[in-house]
Amino acid sequence: MLGVSQAALHRTDVTEGRRRAADPPWTERLREWIQQSPTFGYRRLWVLLRFRDGVIVNRKAVYRVLKQKRWFVHQRVSTPRPRVQGWTSRASRSNERWAMDVTHIAWGQDGWAHLAAVINCHDRERVRPPESSQGGGAGRRSGLSATIRNVASGGRTGPP
Image 1 (cartoon, rainbow, N blue to C red):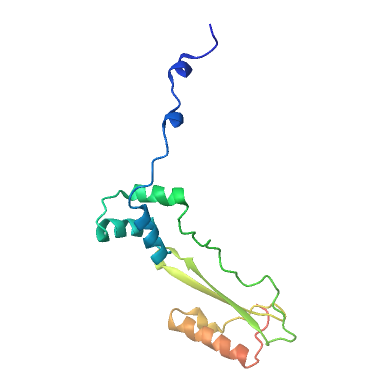
Image 2: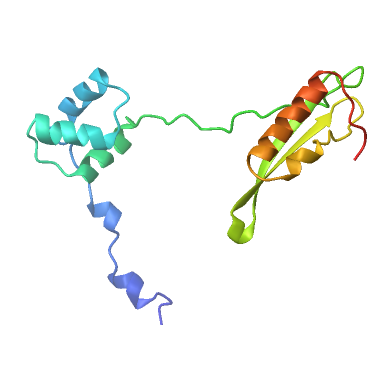
């Protein structure tokens, strides 16, 4: 009839009756701990209050006071570290500069396969390993070493 719901008539506004509680008695001691060690977070401050000062206090209460007083330590934003710039690696002649990348590929029951690629930065050709590198284990390692020695000595392996 009046256009007001029954729930609105019976509900009292909780925020009106609630006053902001006075600061707890341990707030000043908390301020002293923060000035002494400004990098401490609320958990460590709670431990200091509870076990060094003997104040029986809840961890959430310490959190609430720090939040109300804006005493929290500001965390440094962790940004990803800069990667290699997107510039093209340029070399004025062949066998002057190389780029290498290694990746691991899941190879079923055999475990992991390791794929290493070396390219010549001048003509963008893949440097091929010698035929001895096709074997397993030590053969692969010696083949990669031979490829690096071959490239470093100025030998050209040609296109794949």
